[in-house]
Image (cartoon, helix red, strand yellow):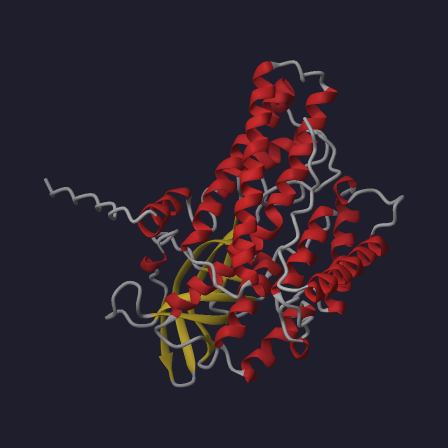
Amino acid sequence: MPRAPLTSPQLDRSSDVDAVESGRFRDEVRQFISGLQPADSPPIGSLDDEDYRQFRTQLRAALAARGWIAPLFPTSFGGAGLGPAEQIVLVEELGTAGIPFGSDNDAFGIGMLGNTMLRYCSEDLLMRFLPRIVSGEYVFAQGFSEPNAGSDLAAVALRATLHDDQWVLNGQKLWSSGAHRANWMFVLARTNSAAPPHRGLTMLLVPLHQQGVTVRPIMNLTGDEDFNEVFFDAATTDADLVVGDIDDGWAVAMTLLGFERGETAMYLPIRFRNELDRLIDMVRARHLTEDSDIARRLAACYVRVEMLRCYGQRLIHQLASGRELGAEAAPFKLLWSEYHKVVTELGVDVLGLEALAPTGRRSPNWYQTDDPGAPNSSASWTSVYLNAFAGTIYGGSSQIQRSIVGELILGLPKEPKPAKSARQ
């Protein structure tokens, strides 16, 4: 099976000057990567746990020193002041080299919250938070889902009541990834119970290290504890720690989720292609290339990765032109999460009986793929396979994404709610 280049096609430029500048920046990023990973250094996927943690820590510090950990932030807030096109180049090159783009919690604090705050917050609030998020002093988790409000965010029930100069929060958040590593959380709370479901919500910034907050890790299928339930019992936060306007949190949340979708569109197709190449290597090493079923399934995975790359490019063009992602991002989330179950199941089938008693290095990533250069151990593939099921739930379940596609893109009528059964 031929291997296409891992990097995505460069964006069309409006002028030759833009193309030259983009090329120079790409060269700068590649030079930076070569300093991190000399030609004779082992790939990140082959590092043991301690070396991996040290590399991630050193990498984050190096990215932060250049402002690249937050490329879209203005330099006054610790960022690089780059535009969307340069951000795309940066993510492409790091992804192709298999280099993580910051820590796991940076996806929440920088990619989602920080970029959203730039749209909605005052200069004073930005100066108070963004430099500390970039430095790593403030580590954020996301507080959206609840026991009765998963992908249906309009059902959020956590209450926040304003008393004098503080908000008082009571309720619970669930499936909060990385909350056990965080000291702050951006929380979608109900501040007006008399308003319709999509109204009366407010996004608040809440410190987690206080007496009224309990963070309780939840063990998942792989035995890891990467997500949590968080309880708020008269927890407090300052009255001015609001992102956007009071009771307008729904619009803020939709902007934030658009940033989440945009980042995944940039790097996920590259990581999925790296993963597929690893799988192809494993098939060849096990002399299964003549197996017609394996060949058919590999070909189907190859096609789906190319679909993701092409659709991701469409979303990237939209971001580069300054337009926010709306319902158009839902198909991408649906496609990648359902695909990842398929490709990792194929990996487990290639392993055969070895997958029943996994051995070797497990994936250090609690979501999505293992890193390029990772050994094709049974522990690597089975841990990623089990986590792939979560991918169809977190960030918006597949059922909800299908409803968005049907109603907002295809214009189909809304699915009727099931009738309530009468009491016997």
